[in-house]
Amino acid sequence: MTSGGGPQTPTPERTYSPATCTGIDIRVIAGDPDMSRVSTSYVERQNLTMRMGMRRFTRLTNGFSKKIEFHAHAVSLNFLYYNFARPHQSLRVRKADGTFTKRTPAMAAGIADHVWSTWEIASLLD
Image (cartoon, rainbow, N blue to C red; front, top):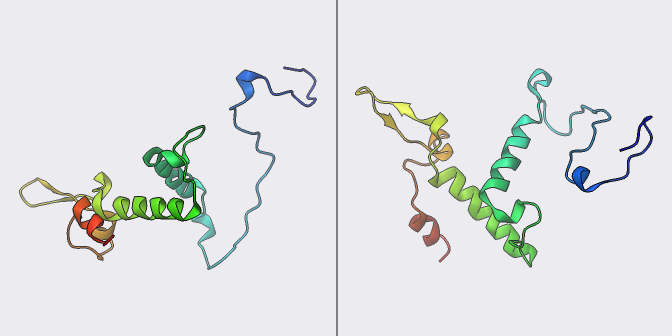
């Protein structure tokens, strides 16, 4: 490392370090958002969830898609499973007897009435 604030040469231990934030620019791209609730945390959480659930999004991997169509299909299947087949603990509902009902985001949004099985998802591919 150099001292005095000059440019630093990447060394092996600094290769994967995050970049230094030099500033932010907050602006509305579309819609009418409540600016007091604007945060990149939601997008960053979704990006992490995708990276953890699909090898295609992890760094330095050989699990990549050779064609963009295959990549789009893999992402679509991941989102379908995430929203329709994977119950989320934060969405569960306590029943009168103290047990919990598992729910998916699709169930919470009212567009599904049950947790989908992987067989149901696969049957959509026919």
